[in-house]
Image (cartoon, rainbow, N blue to C red; front, side):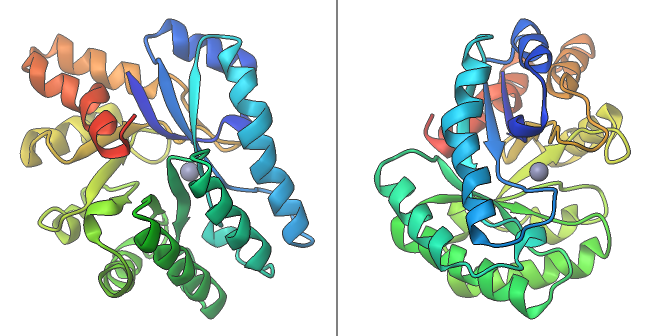
Length: 251
Ligand SMILES: [Zn+2]
């Protein structure tokens, strides 16, 4: 199985072990700095830590971490040039498989400028991107994201993440890949299965988004096992368990 969006830097070695034992071979760890950012050097340190340290920490327990780095909308209050420079370098050196997670939270000018610039970097280098959608004002923000995406990047490079029943109709007919985040207080296994049942298995990725907030490191295997228990077709289950992610991220 592949957990397509998590934050390994915020989690323990015990979680990595549990995930591996539950059948997750690979997880994609994304950037988000949850503390005060005094400047861009603090963010760069966070991004380098994920790349150099957390990947090794997880590997000791069998779990392979693939890395997505970028400027999360909540981290937009810095001078971004140093980070852009490094994102370009990591893409060139093939150290990251995507730019992420990026997106909009409050939709202010800083966030929008940084979001656009990262889309341009991704589009020109044909790099995949993982786009965060917020809990608050989700629909309005998704509409704004769609507008900015359509002006700046090929939608086939894009994952719109944390999709739920409130926004599914805004994104299902576009060329995006869609992330279902099964997480306490966000989405239960039942809602994820309802979406797959109604909208098909072809466009979706599963993830836990485990972070420093309430999280379940086993939410992907729980969803996959529930689909198996409910007798869904094995080929369909494999699509959301790992095949769609392998194909999209080329991993
Ligand atoms: Zn996240």
